[in-house]
Amino acid sequence: MTVYLLHFDKPISDRHTCQHYLGSGDDVNKRLGEHLVGKGARLTRVALERGITWRVARLWQGGRRQERKLKNQKNGPRLCPICNPPD
Image (cartoon, rainbow, N blue to C red; front, side, top):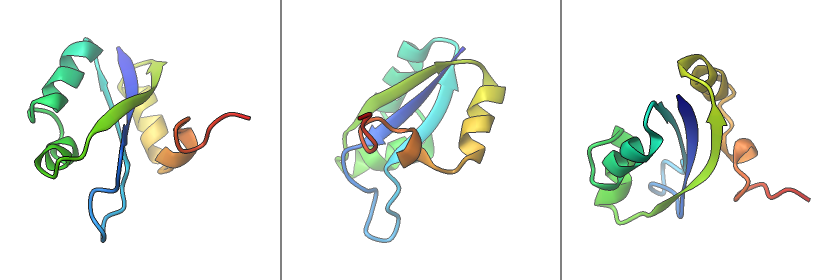
């Protein structure tokens, strides 16, 4: 299983400035394809409806436990190399 971090190219809205989504899947390419056509998570569907594009920012090996560990940090920008490029 692979855990992935998506980076939205702009915030979801003025009130909800979220720009990241963490997810996981056994077949990450299939799962990303679902996000692209509006069959993924609610947040990625909203992004699609609003014309907001996204990129895969990072991948980790691991399952649901790894995904939960990363989500519990509640800090997508810190995990994102697009927002926080390495020196």
